[in-house]
Image 1 (cartoon, one colour):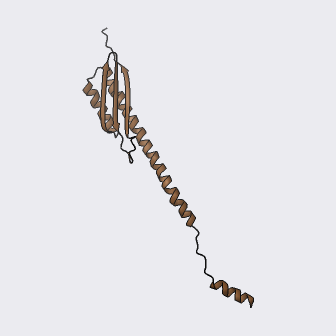
Image 2: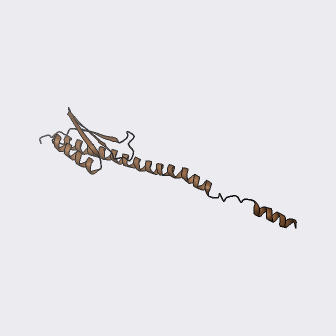
Length: 135
């Protein structure tokens, strides 16, 4: 008889809600945005490093052309072509030929998802001017 009364009381008590999975979904709500931000940051870093490499290559090409006697406009056009094919925007090329050397600076902007002021990259190249000697 006692067991019958206990069974009635247990049936009458409200049952606790099943809360399994609630803490796990809360964890994912916190972890997933962090993981996505880290992946996006890695992609942004890769794009920035690529842009810096493209700017350096464009500067090296322009300096090589200027050091071998090419016109400043031809070197500038070559640097602009490399920079634009590498994905840089708003590219500026500055060449200085003074004395025995050539210095070229290529500056451009890398396309970024979120621009925190780090989108500008530049590359520099300095080469000596080659002299042509008569045999």
